Length: 384
Image 1 (cartoon, rainbow, N blue to C red):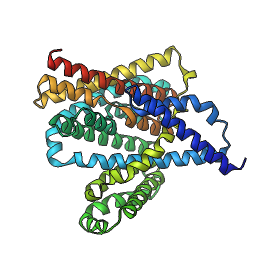
Image 2: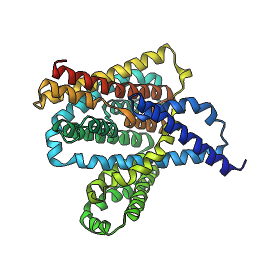
Image 3: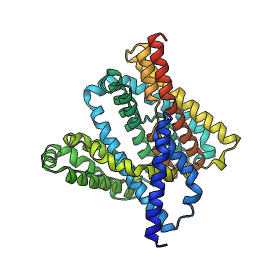
Image 4: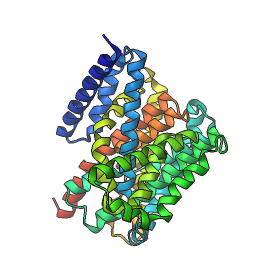
């Protein structure tokens, strides 16, 4: 069979099965990424049989989906990062970021001897940052489903999640740069210019963008997302890091275009490929008593750090116990963002496959907790 036919058939099968698995997970009350990751684990033996050109092409499509998805996620963050919203959320956000980061750093020191592939310092930064992540796309969906998107509680959670995620992704970029070398390539000035120019020239850029048709605007934004991704890849980082920060910058620079809405459909189409392909890295054959203990420690620290830190921050910020509890539960949602974050750490060589498996399990467990805990808090308030 010609290589192109193999590639197209594999694309159709993998994407179709990923969508079916995601739909099944949604019917069970869980995010679609649950089913997509499990689909990747199940398909791993078959995917390893693909010819190398077809496998590389699928990987390239998956990376493109990830770039577009994270650009849209960054653009989705931008409205939550206004001065007014951040001011009201800064104290709760600090608790939801610093406490899990600190506890994660302590855990990472314990884990480093067994799982640090790139040395202890970048490893500690990545693991600590992974504890601080909140999945803003999943959080936004939960808020919409529960009618909290326009409520003060929902807006505060979104703004705090924006602070946590920007801090975590910045830490990941620092860890990757320290591992690969800050001056390994002259691409850094190009990347800084790419981020700075749209912001400094945002008024002129807005006037130009306002004349674009919707298809043209989509093409321009996709090109800018890929250019930013190429910049961070050339700088020795992961391409998704550039796409994420470019989304934040352009989400502020051209809000009228709604970059998140324009690129989210393309990203959502292709990103299941990424989760299926990264699902191959979840190697259940590695599971033994030691890894089981590591998974329990990662899940325990993640839950205690995020719930405890977010609740403490919310209380220090003046919230009453019940809304502080709701805020803490919302901030504990890891979902897709955590899995992407862990996958990038794995691809960069900062963590190993065993710890990646532990972080994926943690992401799934913490996300699965959100719905039941919110329901329980709601019933407690109603006195049921």
